[in-house]
Image (cartoon, rainbow, N blue to C red; front, side, top):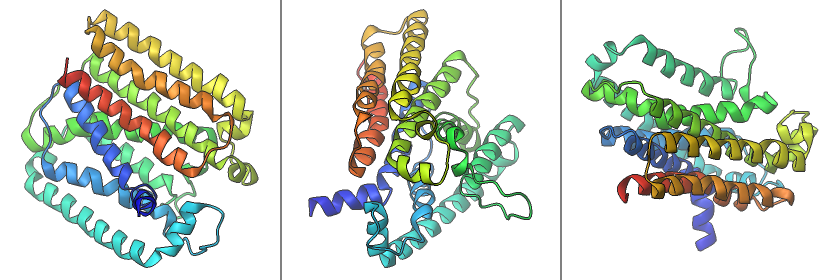
Length: 301
């Protein structure tokens, strides 16, 4: 029963929805801005589930080697109805937010529209949803660029969309600051590292497809020691420098530093192939650890 529940939460992408909400709450507290409406948080939870489930909707082979594909094939009827229900919920939430805040949407500054359109464009192109007679581009097949795109979308979701929705819902303007920029870049790099680590799961498949991810280009160990660890240590040094210059309390610095140290330990352990649950629970779980550490740093200190 316990394993069935774990599969449901992680294979069904419900954990991804939780991560989106947790990262957003973290950045909201760190920026010291008001919270968005409950409708927005509901949308923030449901939309990623629909989006990430889309990639597995065509799974039909219950004997496939990938346990996740097996699960989708075995539960295809449930997934079909669940995806339909969640998609309808997403559309209704979008319509409700649009109707309730139509004035705020019409008066949204151009720079915010550019951010939203860029993010939506990347989300559409990630699955190659643009008709081929326009142009044929699937960002999932861009190899080494893919994790940076994933990191950018997650950072935009966590750090920029709450500010944009706050402007739409209540007219509150959040002044641009170095903290805003730093938190965005920090989330971008952290989620990019996480995406690179997740690519290690598909090393053999990506190699056969000639998809030039970091791990396919330079190998597993070089990806760990030449890409992941340098990015993490650069992030830690930047965090220490920024927080020190802005006189943040030591306890808050240590709490924000902990997820980077933990991710470095997990990255070092990636020398050997891991079970798919390791990627879904441990590696994706690092994002939840980061969010919780950031939240605790603001609430407890």
